[in-house]
Length: 117
Length: 108
Image 1: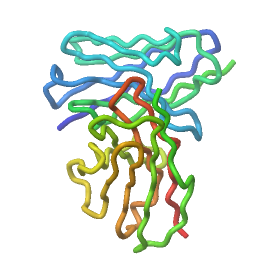
Image 2: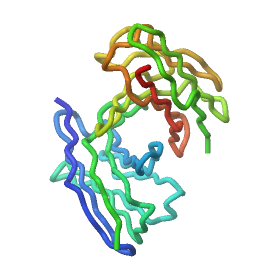
Image 3: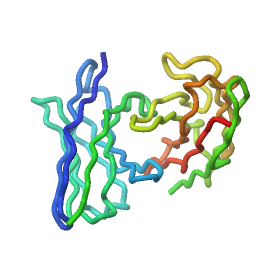
């Protein structure tokens, strides 16, 4: 079955970076897109960007002004989202999700990233 | 960027009642590229509806979606206890892929 399994919770200090992983299995990965979406406490879902595992193409939300980088490790079937120059406003749950034909049909369990001095 | 506005913010209903949730977009969506998700506390969102009106795999038929252009609706015909949650709409026709702010369906 389709599974997206994310790495565990992280705590970082302001100014640091964090890298969250999302291991995909159970489907034909080459025909999908992996998205990253975050949710700050009590806030709406916020789309961050996507990567196409088949060719490595990426697209990002301009809101993050180049602070986020999404990569794909083909050998590990794992997507990574790295966010740099963290501030307290980046404290959120970060989700990866699969797209095959538009909507996000499978989601990872989420990774809590806490930014605190 | 397409802005999605959901209403109401919170609706209080009893099990068995009908829920009608609205999502308005700031620009007309091409090919009705609109999805609805359900999110319960501590869980990831779950896809309910895509293409404005198509139910995702395994979604009960009490959930239905309608609309086109800039006005979309999610209807839950008869609320079950497990339906009390937050519902988000999302457009996936253009980048960035934006979400509404959510509607909370709470038990009255």
